[in-house]
Length: 375
Image: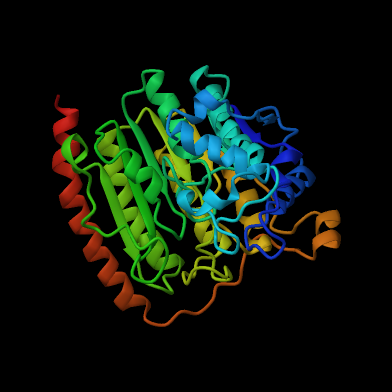
């Protein structure tokens, strides 16, 4: 199995705003940590160079008007129109010089990953600089300008792939991806996230199941604040494997946001690095021979670096030591990959509630998926 990590220093350059919570330098920390583990020097593991997505590639999902507007804003032009497209001077989606190129590079990185899977030169590809799952066809949302996940999935569909599973474990509901394929039975979307009643974007209830031909192919599991490793893993194992085993995807696309971490400043979930990575280990078991993994949310730099290093090690079948390499520890003061597990009250009550929800979701989805398999 050949695995690749998509990276270029250019992916770390775009600063949305000096005080913005999304700091692209987090990708550099992941790269440096993996490099010091010699993760890219193994026979089955290598770096992949990204490229900027073309306008035509962006137009597979986004409107030309929106793409041109982002390009103009990126150059400081037509800023009086920014609110029309979801941008503002001080909100989540601020305008910065060069943001068009940076956003298009993130998309291009996911497209390159998709191409590597389609030509079978790689089996597993991780674009930690992707996972911008909120962006809509003609608006920015939740720090996301262009939706690389949707565009990569459309690349697979255009190549003739008939069944794609998209699994999103970010703290925030993967609304942009779900909406893009809400009427499709070729793309199964599963999102496990903090409830929209307590977190942006306010969507992702269990009643959102798809429509028309896509009815039954959108699955959402909203979680209570303070959900910990035990509850999360139990819910994931009860829900995801049966549905994936029945759907039998040809390609797996995952969004591996680590804003579920107990130290993340934006969400109220309580996963550890090892809890998140246990989910990724299960994803690897479920994945067919083609798996495109994307990054996503994650606003505690230490948690991002440690978790995505663990995730790439899992994806590429490498064992890395819990103690970080000396140079990385001396530079960043991060000496262990794994967390001490925080104590969370109400574990059993939360678990019972979440498991009852997974039972409902399986009942909702299975008849549609089985009908597809029988066609």
